[in-house]
Image (cartoon, rainbow, N blue to C red; front, top):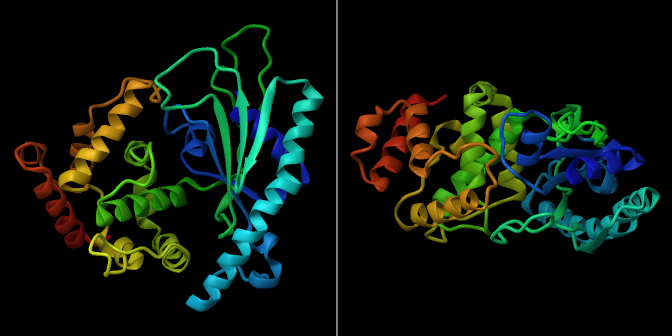
Amino acid sequence: MWVVWALAALYGSPLGEHLVFKGGTSLSKAYKVIRRFSEDVDLTYDIRAIAPDLAGADGEALPKTRSEERRWSSEVRQRLPEWVAASAQPVIANALAAEALAAAIRVEGEKLFIDYEATARGSGYVAPSVTLEFGARSTGEPASLRDVICDASGLIEGVKFPTARPRVMHAERTFWEKATAIHVFCMQERLRGDRFARHWHDVARLDEAGIAAVAFADRDLARAVARHKNMFFAEKAADRGSPIDYAAAVGGGLRLVPAGEALKVLEEDYVRMVEDGLLLEDAEPFEALIVGWSQFMGLPVIEIQRLSCCKISGLIHNLWNWRRV
């Protein structure tokens, strides 16, 4: 409920004009292609709005050089927390006060938290808080308006739940955002915070919904995501020397399955996610995710089950290069 309420408050204000709702929660709330509990709301504030003096009216809003990227990123890091505190926080605070809702808000840099009273206790993997996490290093496009309702809407007679109509990043771009994040993890062999396993769950659901196939076919979109990440999210592989080439990844070198200890760490993260009930329907075993993506790449299941995780990763990587979408 709180996620939808927060979206309604933001998009019912002038701020909504330049905001794009994205990430896994958008796949759940706006596209209904995944069913997992998420209180994290990822929002992009258009870089052309927060830094018009830098991005101008350029459609792609990308710096031309690495030094220019550093200047843009430095300005965004300075301006965005100020915008969250001065613009986003008052909108949420006023909406809470107008409805006399019992919740507290706090701001930490680029994040705004809405802390509410939990009705049940879990393992602590998910806190009773909605996190609005803002970014401002892209346009968030392509995006379009979509209706969002609460999961419990219509299930309790006499109770009116909030609704919202945010601008939502197209699911095909979200697929590429998640797939390239997975690729980085596989290349670096380390987690970046808890709940990273959600990306594998989400891309599996996108595949089942047919969205992954559409995303693979949209080469312009794939290359646009690669250009953006190569510029704003440059990363190095596990050897600390080799830069991760997003263009090569979306062009045929994408890795979706980690190897060795990285796979073990990922499995532990996935198990915690399942045990705390984040998946709202029966959770597939972790191995099923690996087999599922291997099947997507064209490997026979019986062969996959006989292979070590390292070999699975290598085979998928090689087969992907052979297919070259």
